[in-house]
Length: 506
Image 1 (cartoon, rainbow, N blue to C red):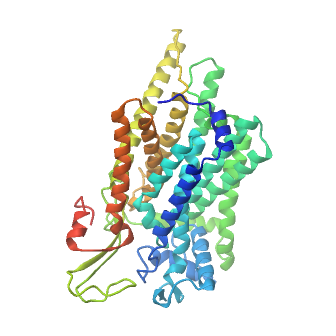
Image 2: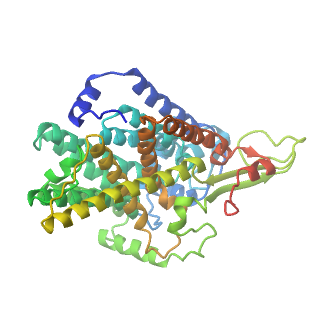
Image 3: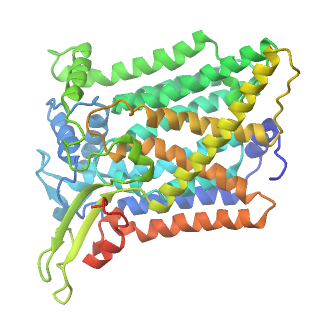
């Protein structure tokens, strides 16, 4: 790999240079991502999967009613706001209207905001990669890989709430990293640093306001903050340590008071305020009462046999059990279950299948990448533990990190730490869980894949570079190949079977 430029110079260079390929690349990814999400958004004029809950909750809220679905109400406001704006602007033709939600509205009205949100997520993940590494190329690669994630595409096209949880959580991390970068540059807590800390706290709190498992984003921040302080304590005692590179190195400069205010007080206040519009509809249940109702709801959800698409946490990295969101067949000449022409009379049965699954080539490569990064982080932790033990026994010990290694190891620690929190939090959950509960963790593995591929692309070995380009090509090809299952495009029975690589993908 080429020599790494110091982090401060990299950020200075990034801010002063204006490379058109970077802006054009991100803009192109956003346009393509948004187009894929908005195309045919009203084709299935019905309620798809959990739209039977979230679209109905939003419609009820617009009518001044409370409907409780076991989660905090922030996504209800967002979808309701999308409905309100869309109906006033007249989006969606008459063929897209139905009354299934409790209001006679267009399917586009309760889906479009999800589409825009999903198109933004790859850009935010890329921005996080840039702050971690100081490099535009790796940011663009991260955004490209995330834009090719089929699960994110599916979740973005329907009135579901997972994309909001992910966006707010990633924004929380983006603002936190921005505050650390500013702290590194200014060497003090300026108003800009405080502003970004407050915005980070709002992002983390809003993620919890979508679903309680959004707290994993904040838990990941706590984990790395504790590690940063621990390593600083070791340095002060003259023991070997593995310090973070900038901007993560700034975590140890946020004392307990600053951290408690920005990463506990602000998130809790954001979460509390998110309940007030909902409680005002019916003040008979207090804020604390609603938290008890959420606990009670999840304690009553059935186990792994409660739903045919339940899947345990340890199967998620291999994507063994995707979720069928929509499935309809049309015989020759029959009306098809979409907004469009009837099935051609000369064709065989046509299948419309929307599967909530990731792009398999991206998903599995990302799983391999996170395993490699766990190995890298584990190796350096072993070297650190050995060095500490040697130092305590009076043996001379050194633990040095090259300029190339420290930034990469810090970014790897960020990915591995957050991924582990996001995934392992489900180990002790006994209720029915679904593959979409792994979405936040999986996007972190996508960032991890970008780190690995970037190292290979900068390797002096030709086979490493060829392997990296081959992996990128596989991701793009896989995204195109499985796109009919992401968009619900018409397929023959043979075409559908060609894309079902595992028996459990039904």
